[in-house]
Length: 174
Ligand SMILES: CC(C)(COP(=O)(O)OP(=O)(O)OC[C@H]1O[C@@H](n2cnc3c(N)ncnc32)[C@H](O)[C@@H]1OP(=O)(O)O)[C@@H](O)C(=O)NCCC(=O)NCCS
Image (cartoon, rainbow, N blue to C red; front, side, top):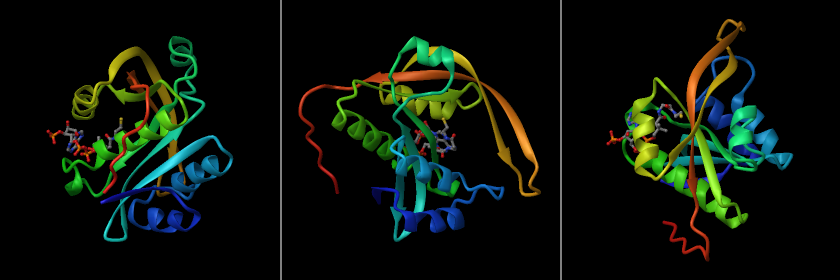
């Protein structure tokens, strides 16, 4: 398994293998934010096929109460491993660790991520990796379904943060 920063040519295979339901590709949106300097979109690959992704948004979570609780904390957003049979093999954890390395390389001292109240397995993984609750918030988001209808979602969530170690990086990548 390899993890690499998304390139323009990766958007099509991401859409093919980990497609978003609607016309508006979330991969294209995340890649565009990366090109504008606002994010870094990490993609996990096995045998030339994308199997996971996660985006570090450098400006942090858009929700005001999260921003107020820890100003300037970058957010790891859109973490996922697909197809589901590839979960529980360390891909998600590896994406998180790579995001932490990126944040440290930029001199950031925290990384945060939001987890929905109905996602206890993901919450267990984040707790295991050292993420602690910062604040509860309500995530309001929308997506376009396969009929082109915009669906609005409201999820109670907790924003978790981890203080990153300072000092030189000792990165061993396989
Ligand atoms: C959460 C997720 C990214 C973790 O990736 P992963 O590759 O399974 O993570 P790892 O293999 O490094 O760690 C596995 C742990 O993740 C957690 N986990 C969360 N959701 C899981 C799922 N649906 N299946 C398997 N493990 C899951 C468990 O704690 C698991 O521990 P276990 O192996 O002891 O059961 C992945 O399971 C996923 O894509 N879930 C669906 C989308 C999602 O919930 N994204 C997170 C939004 S906050």
